[in-house]
Image (cartoon, rainbow, N blue to C red; front, top):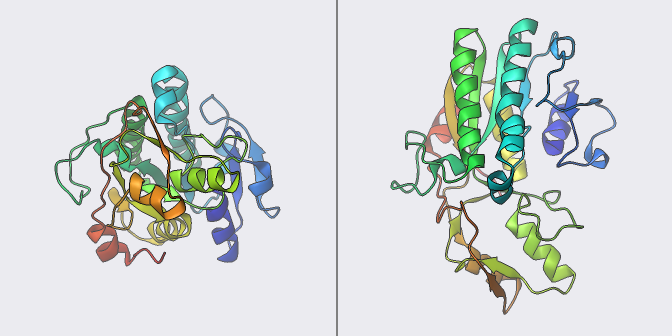
Length: 275
């Protein structure tokens, strides 16, 4: 979110940020923005904040797969109810342009690789199910109320701000940054499962550009994958940073592979990963 804000400011836009700071830091918020601290998962009168807004980017979510099993109601509030409250406020404020950040987790363990947007949803965790529900609510309600909805199913996003240095095992952080942090601190890199699970890692700057291209496009009711079309195993990633590592038990709800087919976003939005 903070990278997207900086990109929008650089493009000449005035930006309002609504965030409860549950997974972010106020230090990452650009001083030029109008910052409002509140929780989208609880009822608020958002209409006033959304008046005369050109674009709405919905990135709010709790992203930890394991914790979504432990506190599914809390995750439902953050990942689904927040979308419904936002949609109702957008309808009231007559906003017409919504870009929803969804997740590749909705595909589960897909049979088709690389995986296109037409692949069936097969969520393996409450988090993945909630992300699918969130995007579908946006598409269904948005279409009925004149909102131009674009959904971005983001694969494994990484970037410098995606790891809390106080929590090197933060499962909402990019595994790349977790590994880097552990190496920097002289700690052993820990790999979950057998390490042969493969991920499509995409840099946050590329994801930001995809968000903006979706926002300014005239596409409506479309879902786009955002990744690189390439995969790396967790063992391969660990080997780039260390000569040895240890293994932890496999995490429940994790897919074996995420491998993105990016032909649709490449062809329709002229987007491709740069990093």
